[in-house]
Length: 202
Image (cartoon, rainbow, N blue to C red):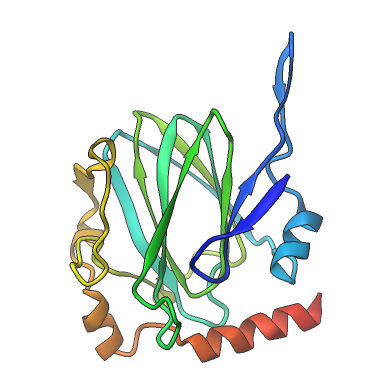
């Protein structure tokens, strides 16, 4: 298993080793020890989610208040999706920037997204099935969204990832500037302090 930090600090791409034979294929899609070594602390698993999406469905940009935020470990078990990480931490050197990773049932990559980062994904196939391991249970009063069409973020998606379907909640989400002005966004300093606390506990 290889772990590579993205240009967005505290976001990681995980590439497993695929073992194939006449029976099919086997892989370790999550290894707590390998992730902890890369991140500095363990993923305190609190909930596991699965979404199944039609082609072109866009979910996000979602984030949660820090602390405790919600770290995510995301992979695709069927089909393909473009996973997108957006740095929403005010004061971060990459604030407002984004990076994407193709997740599919061929290479079987995963993405780890630390607390305070924004997350979105676009389904590239019908019935794209995405599994999430998360560090906090769903708390609607602490979870927010950013308009994925905000030009300040400037998501550029390939033709096969052009979103055709968006939930009403995501469509009504504020822009990055509106969320910042409303005090909804986490700060780089608060997130770093929280990560340090998690590292000390591990």
